[in-house]
Image 1 (cartoon, rainbow, N blue to C red):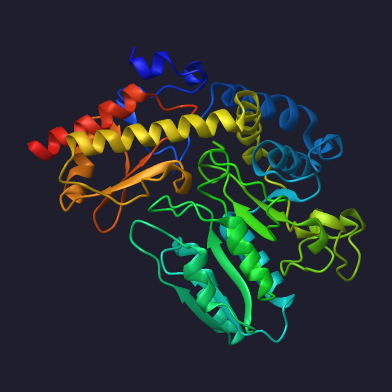
Image 2 (cartoon, rainbow, N blue to C red; image 1 turned 180 degrees about the vertical axis):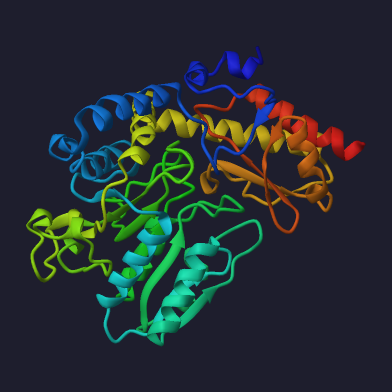
Length: 395
């Protein structure tokens, strides 16, 4: 066993994940988390006993409440959110759309949305489309290749016309961890709201949303929350904003009396009013197991191992990949759970890496992203993966 794995207090959790035959190193856990063995058992039991056994009676036996119950649990375990502010619903894209529209409506007369050019494409495309439809102006924050949004970069684009900032807690490419409380405070000083995309931080980096005064947040369920491909997203709406904001997708489940089927839409009070359609029951099952596992391990311990993994990854890159460029922060306090390294030959290497059982991610134009999910990634696995990259570059 690798000495760092032998000393790792979380190493035993790797045994709870489903193995992949022929895999040497899975370094893409920040894109799609590995499934838990417990989730296979839970989903099968759900299909046989709840869906198959109880059929439509399940809606009265807990299904209807699961989006809010699991949201509260996720909020407690990983988001620093008190009950009644997090719900599991829809995709990240749909949840972002809802909250962008709701936030803009809550700031009438303001004409500008702020977003950075290196934000995830979905976030940028949504902002551009909504701005076009509403005749608003997009104000762009220019960020460095190996960095991300900072208070110093954001402050100059804020003003009396700023309605909303849409930013990521951890940059999807560079892994830059934004100063969320400082940027949020700047936005509030300008009278604007902020919507934080937590896709690359939820479950691996603490983001105490309540303590930091965050307005709105969205995140996916299939990265560090290991809900599987297409797992539902989550949304957070600070409690004092819930009565002020009204989301635009007025589906039956977000109404005050869903089973009345009455005329006219009246939103349900609280976070339920931000739901739209039927809960994704199957899609939530695996998330339940991973939230419970993070709770068992402790988010602080998960973050400590994440830092140790990324620190070791950087040391390995410096040692065996001297021609590669680190495109992520060296300061652990400003780094999320992955690192990106650039090299002009990385695009040609990717198919050969996958053939050899090493699975990182590629980000154009020339970046390999090493996604290190703390509860399922070992130090030995990391070394094997980086070693294979070095070997192929020499060949």
